[in-house]
Length: 193
Image (tube, rainbow, N blue to C red; front, side, top):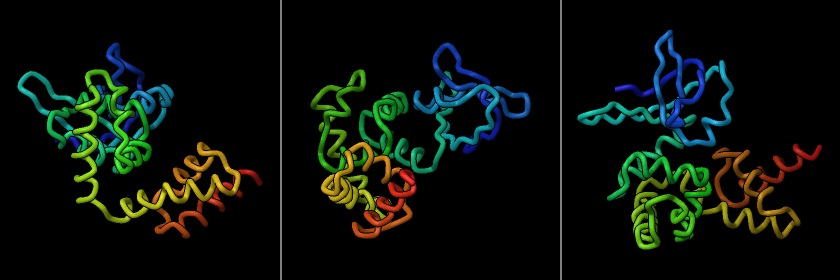
């Protein structure tokens, strides 16, 4: 099983899979489209890989971070969600936004994915919320406080998109509302300086 690939980005295939050249061997890796389109030909890449072995194919799904790979696997663990559907879900929004939507019980983001209707989206949100609660840790604590941090930043005059960008910029470096708010303000301050 392949768990990580490090090599050179060699373009996209006709199916929008990334072609990663590793020592002269080209691997076709399916990944979120935004990630694939952000890569430049010849760029050095390192991807966390999820390998799916089927009777007629060996499919590789690649992600730039363990967090994205973990969320992809969590999506695949939901009944009725396979790797292609999980990748489709990751194509509509970034992992942090999807986790927020799930935590808030908002299924509307998932209905943007081809093949997922309102009832399926609601079922996926319910199952994911339970699974995220089981996997709750530092990232889960940060996720719960993010809505409060965004609200506080907006009360201070920052736009919602600036607030989300600041939280994305600090990642999981801080826990709790106060620490995350402080780190987000520092991040916003450093950008404007």
